[in-house]
Image 1 (cartoon, helix red, strand yellow):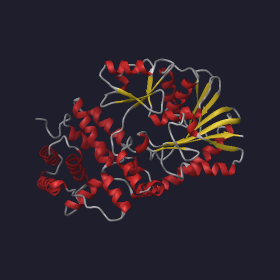
Image 2: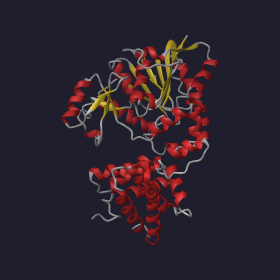
Image 3: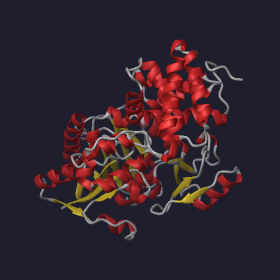
Length: 447
């Protein structure tokens, strides 16, 4: 039997990662680091990953349950141990309740809480008893916002933002969608392979995939696939990982061979590469980013995909003047709060704040003001974000238009042959409707 503190025990490794997150590490980095140091088999790696991301996502719900069943607040480390036990009982049907309880009690014993193992056992068994008969032990407040936030584990301010835009019912569906594990989407490089060719190569190694409905180059992988770098076609540049929503941005910009296209905030380069592919690798794509280090990733991706037309430029796009009047098309995929990708970044819901949004919106206004000067007369700019917050989306575009009368919005749906509907002159991708990351995009033309 594996020791509870062994490097081959998935629950112990999960606890180490959760402790790192508690100290400020990003969840992705904490998982990668913990897995690197562990000796876990493939199946246990999956369990450990599920436990960490699940406990981080469901943190508010789990905290509420601990407060409900404990007479006094446990120490921070013991709280995480209880989170691991409660998460398994509440969300992982494949783990027997007895196994969830016993492994959590052992975890407490080997992590300095032997004297409180009875408390851990009692709390978890109390939760099980309260769940009998199909009732939910979680006691929810009457206030609708707090109720949704507590049940689905989101801060009230995010819930309120979405309820104001979409209403209670839509917001609940959105919250539920964001609590599902993320999928992996690929964008096939049409200069090197066909979608059918990639599907066949993946199927040959036991990885099945489905076509993405809105992207001619998109595939979604099914199930657990392991390290994507080991999948067929990666080294040959046949494809790169990119969510289906992010793929739509390239189609909306619709770059043409021979043009000068500028990607203002490009790193790590997925969209720059897509633009180059759409242009048949003819013309120039300037990939700009204020981080010279992150631009190395852009160059690496371009090299692997065998794209020669991408040039990099390090610098803040609010002050790059060499591009004024040079761009046939400009892509401005701005830094944002990422509220459309909360399933991918388990801790992002706890890291962002209403105050951050105001700061980001100011940055976005400044970027749009300056990047618009790069566009030639009758040229196109696409403004996009991976968030679902109106201050970063509609408000930025509307303010820009109010001070730039020579610009106008173009109906985005025509670039998708009506496959994606929009009642506004911009496109909002809602995850629970489109089964894609949340995205906002607006196509602007200069007069």
